[in-house]
Image (tube, rainbow over all chains, first blue to last red; front, top):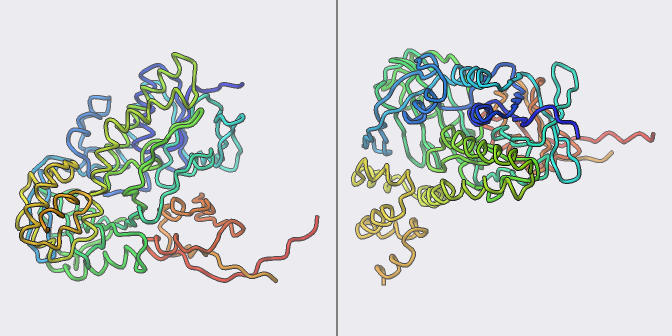
Length: 408
Length: 71
């Protein structure tokens, strides 16, 4: 078998590039292929990233620079349909992804990896059931690359794993449709991110304002992808209704973005002989808030450790790579399943319910909910249930038995 | 001439976000440097991509399949 590289990574987003950084550190010869014209662009993201992940990237060799870290915020306002809000403190950045991914590509290269843009991988090369390489097009030229291990980090599209024979199709039921404007000239409180909830505002999702500087922000929306109306329709409607409040009237649109967001349908199996899937391609996204960058990088770190072990043993079989599945499910998988149950409850809430929760929830409750803290969610739901019995059915995944007892 | 309902791409509305690619149950859609390419042979006309598209850049249309020429 020809072996040109140790590992080929398909997709140079946060997951693929972080894998390259970590695997190169372990001495592996890593090649990252990305079909985009420019690493980091176009952006399909609201760009929010917790301070811990930002610091982690600096510790891993990215410059400690606002050029990619972007704009620091200190918390989040969550707004109910009636305008009431809850403030949840917590530092984070609205990063500049076009710069972040370029810095990640530079860091990976300094560690010994190679990144090639505009390489459109359209197929995998297999020997029997084993993935041994990929076929790519580079400016009209056909190219083949061989390695005993391929990492599918090709984002929401997730065609590489599917080509190889792993079922990673994103079910429409577990997909949110995302649309976003980068707007400037806004009148916003730029010290926090702002999330707006409501059944008319954004069915199943929310509208967000993520500041990029004092008067510039990502203004976007995520909604259930199965709706007849488009995400753009809902966002434009909301912007029109709030044009005076946030200065949308006189604002400029400097970029238009969109994308699919996997908000469920987690994969038990993300490996096969010679292949691991990470990030959006493996649906590693938080089903409540739709954030995926931190999870993709966490998965990438795990996958890099498993890859290093596979090289020590010179064994790239599914059985060896299975450690990645196991550890992911131990560390994050179950937590995400709980957050998914919370998404189901969330989908059933009426505008009245949202208004009610804005009244009763503390910032710590909200953090516990987003962590998927089942005990805390149960306690909140049982308390709420006494005042609003209709919530019993809506929170059935959490309080099934307890609710039945309570309601006789 | 056989007719078939398939997804059709409206390039001028497209923001090239790739959502349609990820949700296509038969992997009939690809995002290339030329934009969205839909394999009409594979497309089943299920409409999932049409509903999911954030900007309405896909539509279902009835098309007439060209008769296959004998080699």
